[in-house]
Length: 158
Image 1 (spheres, helix red, strand yellow):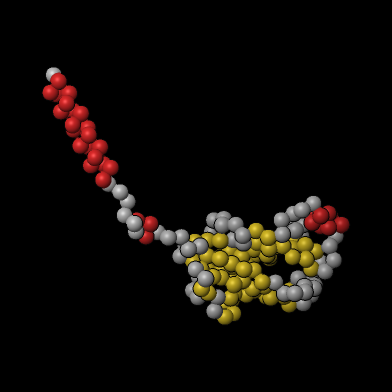
Image 2 (cartoon, rainbow, N blue to C red):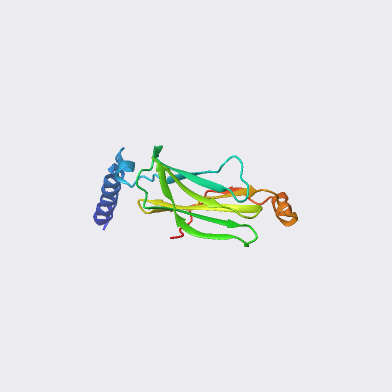
């Protein structure tokens, strides 16, 4: 009986020793997919006014390099109060990594532009707030209440 007990203890000790010898390889992290998220910078003109052509731009980068062939780049523009809403539209390539859309905004107020872009199945939807002309009293109050000015969320919209 004692012999069996020592044998079990011996096996347990040997098994523990073998398991402790297993360790991760130093390059184990390289064997997993590395995340390289798509980054977008929305670029607005310095001044915005009604009834003039306004060009909205977005600069796309990934791993610090300009994105040449994204899966898609769309712009969506709307007025905060819902009175103006442009449907989502395909952006035009302007130069390497920069895409644009030109629109004429006919009303003063608080607007948002949201970019929907993807590269390699990694969709992003950053949004930026901007002002055209004069704000209404309700829009001014909304801004004073601390509404967020820009979001760079990674929402899956498409």
